[in-house]
Image (cartoon, rainbow, N blue to C red; front, side, top):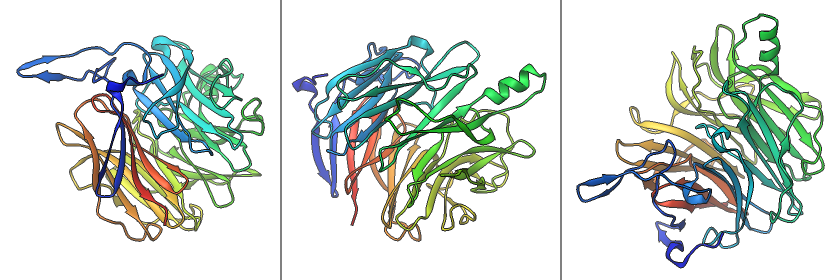
Length: 416
């Protein structure tokens, strides 16, 4: 997609932040009706088309050569675009698939994209197969740095439901993918047994996603509607965090290391005591620092604590620190996201003040022992996606898709 001169981004330096904003038309679409006010009149316009300006979710990934790849979903279409100038222009936009209203665009659903050292691209997303929220995860591959993609194909051969893929790329170019799987739920239903939730399934690929190892379960009982957080530890083992279902219907956060021998024991992040059979649609985030410390952020409405919280573990999740609240007490806080490099940790989240959605960032230079003062780095008064953090070498960026103010790529830190 070539961006017109009128929609070229601008760059500002504010308090040491490098900001690159792709100014896209301010149009609302789908369920995300955004008001555009001119004087005393208010008009709601539905966004049409599959371009980034109509997207509901966008996921970034920097390739080893510094190129930004962006995967997004808009009006039932999954697309991938590239930028060699930090989002100034998007080129080589490719439509991967068109699923219309069946595309999974729930609040915790987003396309996943990773790139290996040879420039091969792996993409995963989900769509609904029926009106009962049974979904299928499709994957597509590119062997020419994202210029063309293979036809999407089902991740697994099971006919039940798979949603919320989470993808990691390891230094040896192998791919790790985890997801919410409902085959055990489907089997229980056929046997006349009532069983809630889903399961955490995972697999690896050593050939860029062309083939995957036989899928395995990390946990047979998890929330069915919350995304999985993932990171690599210092041994390049995947570490996942998710909302597990504990005894008595408690849905609290748990972490797990996936070693060469399989899934290690599940570790409870915090005893929030959230008893619910509902779908929060609000998954956690995890980052692993250079010391091997796990940093986790999550949302809960438990009997013991309610809000958005952070905790860390220095022993691979066996014990976690006392949870600390993210944002001020009483603030409307959501969508925390973490990134760690060396001893530095960045935490982003979103707040709503009744009019605007605001993104805050705070940073720790000592592996989560102490934190700097939160800084508001961007805001918008229309629809906005979750704030995400991504690094390009030593530089850390906030990636934030907004309907009114365009897609934003904001440098928020640098590894020291």
